[in-house]
Length: 49
Image 1 (cartoon, helix red, strand yellow):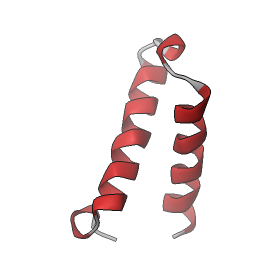
Image 2 (cartoon, rainbow, N blue to C red; image 1 turned 45 degrees about the vertical axis):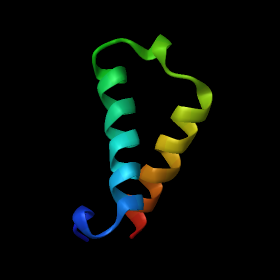
Image 3 (cartoon, rainbow, N blue to C red; image 1 turned 135 degrees about the vertical axis):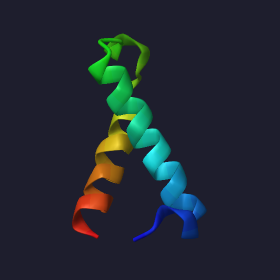
Image 4 (cartoon, helix red, strand yellow; image 1 turned 180 degrees about the horizontal axis):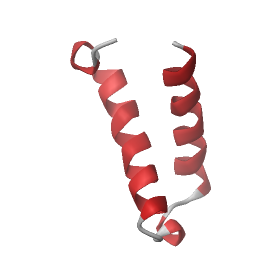
């Protein structure tokens, strides 16, 4: 599933990457619960599809 064919997939990958980078760099306090929830949903989407 190439990400370049869908704007929605690109945005989902961007949000997921943003959240993962914030968590890995130790800046988890910058994230709100909505962003973390979206990242979990998008991770599930990419894993299941």
